[in-house]
Amino acid sequence: QVHLVESGGGLVQPGGSLRLSCEASGSILRPNTMGWYRQAPGKQRELVATLTTGGTTTYVGSVKGRFTISRENAKNTVYLQMNSLKPEDTAVYYCNLVMIRTLNYWGQGTQVTVSS
Image (cartoon, rainbow, N blue to C red; front, side, top):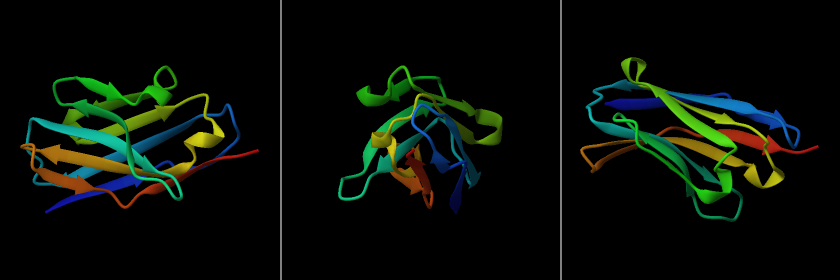
C-alpha cells in the first residue's frame, strides 16, 4: 500500500506565501513522478506542478514564476512553495504520485484559501 500525507495548507492574504508538503510512504518505486493538482469549487481538478525523480518539472502556466516544486527523493517527499498568491489560487490541493506510468495515488487534499 501507498499513502500520501499532505500538510501546509491554510488561509493567507493575497500576495502571501505558503509551503505545502507531501510525504509518501509504503512501497515506493523509482523512477516516479510526484506532483500537485488543485480543484476549485465548481471546477475540474487541474495540474499545478509535477517533478520526476530525474528532476524534470512541469508547471501550469498560471503559476509559473510564482510556485516552485521540489522534492527529497530519500524521504519520498515533495514540496510546493507558493509565492505571490492570488485569490484564484484558492482550491483544495492534492498530492499525486505516479509509478510505472499506471500506478496512480492521491493524497486526501489540503485547503488553500487566499483572501483578505
